[in-house]
Length: 241
Image: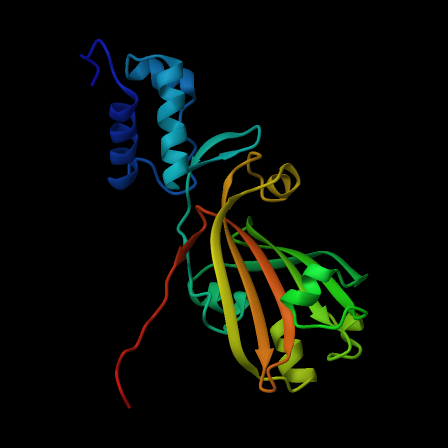
């Protein structure tokens, strides 16, 4: 490409994408600066920046605040319809998972949450916030609402690693149905800071309502994933028994 007088952003994208696909740039490698890219490919810094933003939108690279651009690491295969635990399925894929509790509090239920959780207007909920990651990289934020009247003592339980384990082990609650709502959104400035991403970064929003065998909503879970960190993978088995 060095012989070209004018290089477009699409050509820069193609060049960098080939570098990633052919292994010249490995996962977590730092990319050259916009200035270096523009000089190497004989284009402008504006064109180089446009190309980087397109690759970011594709999830091929990501920005780390104040550190520059990096090749995106291997994605986590994630099946939101299965009742498998984050710490387990991430470890099974060869990652080192972690989970950090950001806060836990009792809150008065709002009318919106009461409708969402089929709960009484005077119930108290336990609100849990966590950040979870793999190989030292934060990948999603989570807010969980739990119905304390159905789960007495839940506030005092250790919930940092796995709420599901506590519900099945300590309360003998079996998950009967799971309702999922998956959309695309953008991280707020506060969320982005916790995920080491720029404000407005694209995220995958997973809203999950879990019911027990009696049809009672036990928890309402909201997850905000970096869009470059996961691969939604759902197995559909159409075989008849």
